[in-house]
Length: 260
Ligand code: ADP
Image 1 (cartoon, rainbow, N blue to C red):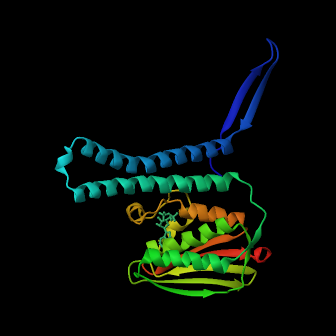
Image 2 (cartoon, rainbow, N blue to C red):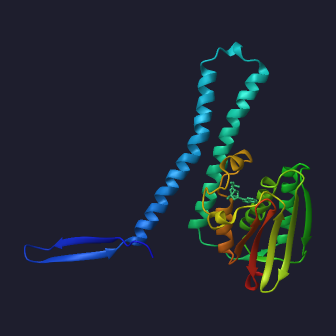
Image 3 (tube, rainbow, N blue to C red):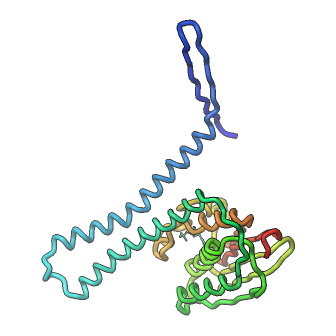
């Protein structure tokens, strides 16, 4: 659907012979728009922390050294370091995304999913720092054919999000089980949930429901875009179910052909 864009080109061979060429460039134009939007988004995402960082640096430059005591100096340095780390996280995620898009998939190897899930749960528990309760139901012998590093990021992205978007006192349940036609990794939280009109765009790069909440919790806005890519490279599907105010379930469904 939508408008089509045609490119018309007049080619003259000599005074008498000319040829009119038309080409449908709708698809090319669409890709170009996506690319332009992406460059604009990246620039915007990096500009914010850079502006803050430059602001603090200027303030410090114009301040006599004795105007700050040790605590204040440390305080400013920490604020600046936060901004630098934020940029590092964005750039690291962008590199991950670009590698996923450009590199061919490696030979699938049996991957110990229960071990990767246990590691991700340890990280999530540390990040939660006692603010949430966790529950796990994991089939210990259920492995997947794929790339371990990629699967580890997908597993951990969904768990970290559950921690980020679930208020204190909430509950997070992780399951890894066989089911009809394959296996399913699911992370269920009792968090803030997502309004249904956001769901179709959630895996777009830099798409966030609440920009400031994502930023505060250290999100880059690229986690689900990365997770979706990894799922695709494993023949898996990312499912999202959510009820605003009640919670969300993010799951990865792997087909039988991928179960080791
Ligand atoms: P971010 O770094 O912002 O978390 P993601 O790509 O991981 O980026 O997620 C995109 C957006 O999806 C988030 O900003 C948030 O609005 C929403 N989201 C992701 N996971 C959850 C969840 N478990 N509960 C509620 N909202 C979520």
